[in-house]
Image (cartoon, rainbow, N blue to C red; front, side, top):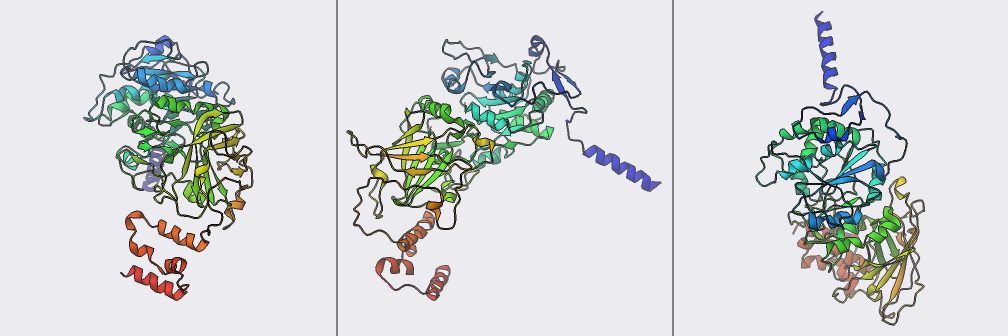
Length: 560
């Protein structure tokens, strides 16, 4: 009898703990209500006109998700509206998109506001806020998803949250959301680039500046419990950590997508964007900060972002998608971040290094070492011969090609006996648009270098070369051992160069010595590293060191 009682008790216990917190007893769908009744709900309403019943199919659920299924909730304020509305106008499509900009008070509507719908958030003075260094507007902003839901819009699959200085690539947002079942609970976004920011807030939190998406059923569940949930977290700092706290109570984890960018960084963003993850670019944030720039010598941040409009129309799926080319004849590595920047490096850099962002920036706390970020990075090119030649996209684009102009900076003379890209001032990149790029497993696009069909110099003395990006994800761009340049589909180009063809080329042995020395972290380098048996042999015509001599040298280095 006692055994039977214990078994019955355990079965009830397991049945209890198997049910997640806040799980509804039934699956549900939504019956739309009269808009006036729904919008009248205040922040402390105890009742809702949103009825939950047993599940029924959502109309047109087999239709692929498109922009019409997404409703945006953009957080702004009356104080910043006049300057921030320009960022929203860059990506907002009045006749294709739905959503609202939520303000704290009324603002004057100008004729050139591009039809952006404005709404005033509900009063949140009854909610507790106890974070001294924060601002209680976080409570108003965290309720935007719930307030947008109460507007009762029809045929909604996703609610997307963003700030007024968030720059979205709408078509790529759609491509990301199409991967997920909108009838299920999904909380999609990304974390901060700053490791310390993620420690201070959460690695499980989607940052609202980079934007995040919540599926309709999850928004329904959030709306039911959010006001009570907010009251349990008066000490949190912002709006996005309050959203994450409620998601934790609902038992919904963050689904991370690498294309959402919070950009908790300062400085030159070229290192970050030139090596964009192999994922569609969905959003950019914090570009209005004076310390941040995506194009050099461009103080007008809105004008800088406008330069992406043309590539977005040509091939939004491929925007900032990195390709890596090799020119074996010239011994160059070429990185193409399509629609943004082309970089030409002297020497051969393998893909494992090129896919890492170069630290041209510092993190939110002004740290610049490799432990400051939530992803792997590589240091800046310290050697003058390894500093890349950088070409930024110009406004001169055609239906077939994008043009990139050399950003001229003072460069020291490089002693390496190899051709220099310094005479190339224009790079043309040809690319076939592929809107279905992300329907396949993610893979970096291939590229190849073609001989230029233009004259080497024009009347202005400019030298031109072309890069041709034609390989697709189905192409056989495999690498085999040391035969890297040929296996990546590179066609050597005849780049003009002023290097003396009779100069003795650097040997593979000498290059290997240089490479090994340069790989030593700067803070660990010493004169001792430059004087080895290898350097004596390669540069001073010393005897070739025997294996036993190498072992003895390695032993002495570790026991100095």
